Length: 144
Image (tube, rainbow, N blue to C red; front, side, top):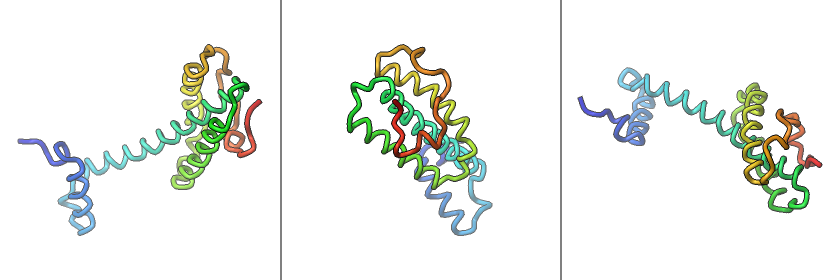
C-alpha cells in the first residue's frame, strides 16, 4: 500500500480532515492522526512558553551581569518578550500551572545562552532562577 495523504501531503491532509469534520463525516476522518496532531499542538504551545521565557531570562541575565552593555536594544528585547509571554498566556491560560516547570527548564537553557553571548562562565550565574514569574514580567523590573 502506498503512502497516505497524511504522509505525502500534510497540508492537503489537514484541509481534507477539516472538510470531513465540518461536514459531520467523522467516521471517514483520520482520528488517530488528528489526535496526534492535537497533542503535538499542545506540546508546541508549551515549547513556545519555554522558549520565550528562555529569551527573557537571557536578556535579564545579560542586563544584570553586563551593566556596561545595557541599552535600548536589550531593554526592547526584554519588553518584547514580556508582551509576547503575556499574550501567549492570555491565549492559552491552561499553561499557567506549567510555569514553574517551564521556568526551571527555560532558565537552565538561558544560563547556556547567556554564557555564550557574554563570554562569562556558566558557573557565574545562579544555578536556579533568581526571579519569580511576576517579577520577571514586571515592566519596571531590570535586575541590578
